[in-house]
Image: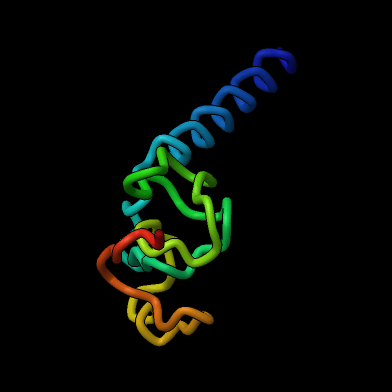
Length: 93
């Protein structure tokens, strides 16, 4: 009986973890996409041209990749290249 309960508890924990991973990157309404602030390899998913998903940005502050940040904070964030952007910018050449 103890083994069955432990197995059920483990299965429930696994299901919860998988559901969290499967949720889209912008599912949390308290967050917004902020472009141009991510460090190389630290962007969030669905980043834009030249990237396929999380962790694929090629350079620091790449303007066509985003990082999820608390809503309302993006444009106040500063980098050596300027402020965060709510829309993707041009990829640096």
